[in-house]
Length: 323
Ligand SMILES: [Zn+2]
Image 1 (cartoon, rainbow, N blue to C red):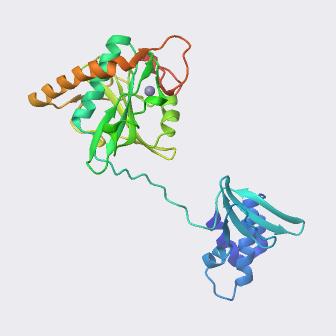
Image 2: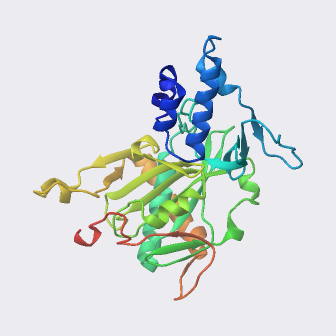
Image 3: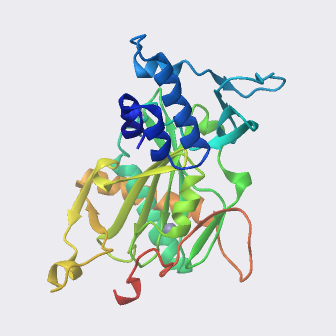
């Protein structure tokens, strides 16, 4: 829209005015075009004209000019100051239309989660499921200097559809976790599929990092999905691209179905040699001893804490009841 309108400059400003719809942003655009028209003959690039409008950062005590056109960036967005024949205004705009679009990106700088860490999460979720028929969650800590991951199990109240962490048990004051930072979470979906539930998505938005969901923990091949969140923007990432040692299994239900199957997740087993298997068994014992006592079955009506919820059917596009 912006390019198209600005190009109209050659045809004269009157036509441009007709093209532009009413509204602060489009009026601002008209002003740009008019300014450009005024510069015709001075051989200025249109960007230079556009960029000649000042952009102010809204700070305490700032004295904004009372004349001229300019933009102001504040905590509540971008605003344009616009003088006109009937007065002047400082009103919100969605963007500065004559500038180029900003290409957004998320570029994680984390190694993949080691196999043993994934195993610890799976072992914990299996134990919680067998004991409480409930979900559970762990926090992923990472030490960038040592390139080392540690899972932390916060005290939590669990049920079949939710898991609430105790905020006071985030692990942040643990001496063993000095030098480590929280880089994500892993939570379970009991014996149903891993998927990004609506509540998961809104929970994840609050925490930058890697978020993994593991489902079907009652089966040898568990389901798994993962996403990376940075400043409320989520990118779904395939589990193999963020965890080591996963072997993708076929989805028997979807493979056999005669119908195109939506909302299926991927199923995995872990590639462990006998040595690693021994280690995983030892870890499972430690989990039973140290993590399981921190898990309490939620009594009805308990609320509070940092929550990871999921529902079998939360309207996020699922035919989950069918599977
Ligand atoms: Zn969930």
